[in-house]
Amino acid sequence: MRNVLIILAHPNLANSQINQALLNAVNKNDKVTIHDLYSIYPDGVIDIDAEQQKLTDADAVIFQHPFYWYSAPAILKEWLDLVLQFNYAYGPKGEALKGKQWLTVLTTGGSKNAYSTEGHNRFTIRELLTPFDQTAHLCGMEFLPPLVAHGARNLGKSPERLKQLCDQYQSFITELQSDDFDSNTVNHLEILNQRWEQ
Amino acid sequence: MRNVLIILAHPNLANSQINQALLNAVNKNDKVTIHDLYSIYPDGVIDIDAEQQKLTDADAVIFQHPFYWYSAPAILKEWLDLVLQFNYAYGPKGEALKGKQWLTVLTTGGSKNAYSTEGHNRFTIRELLTPFDQTAHLCGMEFLPPLVAHGARNLGKSPERLKQLCDQYQSFITELQSDDFDSNTVNHLEILNQRWEQ
Image 1 (cartoon, helix red, strand yellow):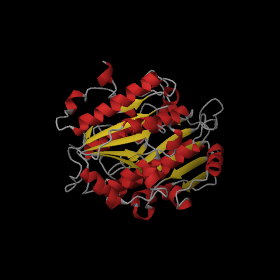
Image 2 (cartoon, rainbow over the protein chains, first blue to last red):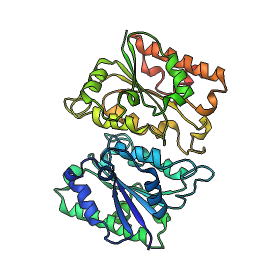
Image 3 (cartoon, rainbow over the protein chains, first blue to last red):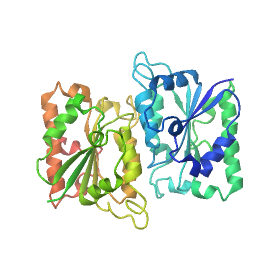
Image 4 (cartoon, one colour):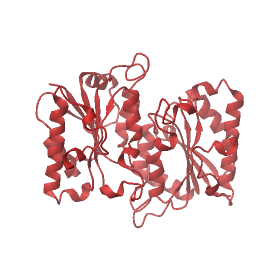
């Protein structure tokens, strides 16, 4: 069974009903690790060696965070800047992450319709995620379509939608853990949620 | 004369020949302020009220930083997350930044050719900047094409190219300070540098 590392970046997890629900849905086995950056590093000082070891041990990495200004909270940027070093994650000797999957799990305030050329946010989620997409690519990782909890503020009022999302998250981690996961089955999707909604 | 605020985010400015050269080229008058986040906030704790006051007083804002993982160093993300508050920068009462220009001034390791669909980085600079573009848009700001110092590591060996870039920076700040700046003259450009190179 493959190792899945969930890097969580939420500065106020206690107030995020949706992120908590998602974390509760995560598969409970010793090959799934939830790694909560704000809780582990309250002063924001990241232990680069420890983080690299965790990454090296993982077969797939999930980055779970709210979509703050169309990107991740600052601690995840700090983590990327420090941990994904030259000749570790990229560069001639940087092969530590090659072939691992990168899945972004996002909560957004805006609705699905807001993320389109015609919508309030003018760009699709995939367009806004290009910096992470290309970061993954440079490290030889497979960037998967993101799993997105749109309209997170109202999702608590729709227990069925929330349960559906949690089930999707859990199913996908099960797939990531299995040896026969094939990213070609999802690569063409705008967001991973569509896999179960088509 | 209009106020121009330069928000600088470079964790190791002493080692960045190009960022130093660019800063040296900046217009020396009392309406241009260089605001160096890493130097002002060595512990990363940002004074939100002071930052909002600076922003409110500015007519145009320049964000100058290296392109770390296709985005800004973490301190600038922290700054955006904290300073651009609901009902200050956006939301029904959030009109403090309306009509101000946003210019990104970037240094990249990669060459100009690396930033294209066919290039090493697979996306254009503008595509990678969509999170900042839409952040500016949501705040009612005008997002200008970025001024980019491509191949920054080798730029020090090309004094003429570096001087040209510094001259472009200085000219553009002069224009931003003048009352008759018209963003329509640059909006169609991929990067601002093209204004002087066509």
